[in-house]
Each structure stands twice: as structure tokens, then as C-alpha cells.
Length: 239
Image 1: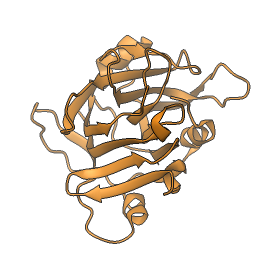
Image 2: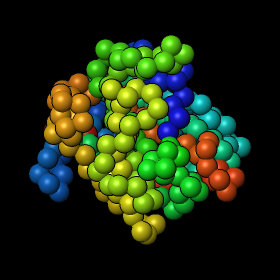
Image 3: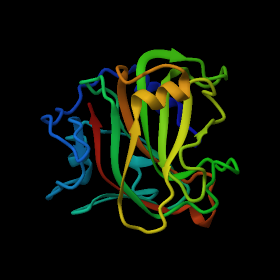
Image 4: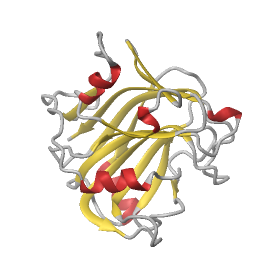
């Protein structure tokens, strides 16, 4: 994806307080939920206020309803790009690490046309970035700010599942991993092992260094008027 560098710099430097972590509870695998954000609890009122109450802030086009629609419902939050857009919902600070894994309940109803990391059209209907630590790593460009290590987790439409893709910048400190290529619109649960996964990606175990995350959509390089539609139901960090 083409990163919004200003927004990522804000993530790296932010000192906002996190929303309260959930009480530890067992998952189906026996792991404990150390932190959870749930998008199925909307009842009424302004959607933006509901999302801010969860500790999320709006970066790039997520504040522009002519470009990105945010539609809450019983199944979760639908994120729709209505035209070429790039936007982030950002939680810059979470506490409770070490986390052994991240578990995401999500789905895609419509992928951006032509999106493919294999063909270097680095767009996606939904991606969850996980950031590690506060030490900034070089971007590789004097015009792009340095930020901490990160992994971008997404649902793809034909790219290699589990393959660590490298972007145009942050080539040493950022990786993009497709966690699934679903053939139906039904939500699925994806899991990424933070300890083993970051060791394989970067040669270091970052399970103790999780410092923030974001939820994003990017259709800025896609065809078909840049449209996409995805659902995010729940994110859990497990220990």
C-alpha cells in the first residue's frame, strides 16, 4: 500500500492513552485475550464519536464521508471506499504486551479492482498494521519519515497467503502478509503468531514490543472508481 507518511509519523510519536483492555478471557485455542476491540456494540449516536470512544483517531480519508463510508451494524463495522481513497483508524498506544498472537475477525465483500501485491498494485480493502516499539527505523527516503518496525496484515484476492511482501519504503522494517484469500463474503477469523512471525520476518521476537495498531483501506491505485467494501468485527491481542 502507499503509506500516508504523515499519519504514520503521528503514530510513531503519539502519546495518547489507550482504551481500556478487556478482562482476560479464554479463546477457542486456550489463549488469553489481553486486549480486545469489538465493533459489534454500536447502538445509536454519531459513528465517529462511537469510534473515538474506543480510542481510535481518524487519519487521511477516514474523516471524509464522500470518500470512505463507515457503517456500523450487528456484524461489525463495514468500511467502504466510494472512490479512490486511503484512510486509517489509528490506535497509537496499547498496553499489556507481551502478546503472543493477534486474532482478527473480518471479511471482504469487494476487493479493489486490480489490487495485487504480486503485481505491485499495493492496495487492499482492509489491512491491520501492528507497530513494534518506539525506535524509528529508516524509511529509505529523505522525503519519508522514519517509523518503528511494523507488519501489515490483510485479506487478499489471489496473492500468496503467508508470503512476506516488501513495500516501496521501509524495506528493512516493514512487511505485508496476506492472512487469507476468502472465496465468500462471510467473515472469517485470522490469526498471526507475533512471536514466531516477527522472528521469521525480522529476525527478532517483537511479541513484547507491540505498541499500537491501525485499520486501513487503500484504493488509491485501483480501477473501477476505487471502490471496495470490507468488514471488521473484532481484534484481539492474545497472550
